[in-house]
Image (cartoon, rainbow, N blue to C red; front, side, top):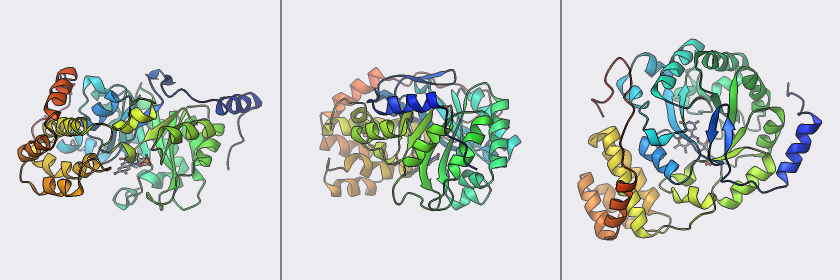
Length: 370
Ligand SMILES: Cc1cc2nc3c(=O)[nH]c(=O)nc-3n(C[C@H](O)[C@H](O)[C@H](O)COP(=O)(O)O)c2cc1C
């Protein structure tokens, strides 16, 4: 059953706040954690590496998220999974997202996430991918509200940092399950909810229906983050004003494009070619440090199109880079295409050195395999 809307005062406040423009540069709180802006960088599997998160923070994201981390992988001390818990000091505030179906395994994973230094533990109730849903994790949890609440309760009891939940509208098209489950998750201890109002079945097709986000805001007393199709400042303002959400989350629009965050915050426009190339090379170097050269080489290929597309460079240039053997050659070609990028890159590296990764007090080394 859908819970009743909030009391009269809350509705008045919402009505009042919705008629005003939200200052995207204003801070807000998730429990005891201060989030400096209203833009959150989305968790994206295969994208949200440390380089992506650090870059997002530099461009003004108030909160960044890791991609989803398997609680079973953490339980079994899988080397690659543990690697997702590497956090640099300039990423904060940072949420690390976990997924799984068993409350006690999720609680144990949450303890490890907190020990690694995350400011928030985020629970994934949105992943629509079969490999995840068939294990009872991700969006499937929305169809089992009692288990979903048990997971949130177990995680909230296990850690002192705030717990957040990210969910879809439900499994089937047109579903409004999130409005039933959301309040239960808050009762169970969630300090914030992120809603991506597409069904799991939709994957990424159609549109995010933010009228559901507005309904969810009315039902819960915690801040709600609106995720889905926020690609510009105008869209961000509309979503915040019409839903009463505390913040917007930016996903695909920020892939190879941190300038989208800056634009949404009302600063700067399109980058120069030199800036694009410098950011891409910095991203490549940091990713090699994080994943090792071999993994990084294939991981990075999709980023070439994301950075160099959007009319910034001719299409054939991306293809040329993909076909090059090594990352050194890619760097050389990039600098040839925009020689001034060298100076931008030097400035960037000097201004934002990666000084101190947090050394994890975990049972096996996570630094070996890259
Ligand atoms: C490549 C990709 C990977 C994603 N991985 C995750 C994930 O690991 N966890 C999660 O909660 N959402 C994930 N999402 C969903 C995004 O966080 C976001 O909710 C969705 O893309 C809608 O926002 P957008 O329109 O701004 O992209 C992923 C989305 C994409 C495109």
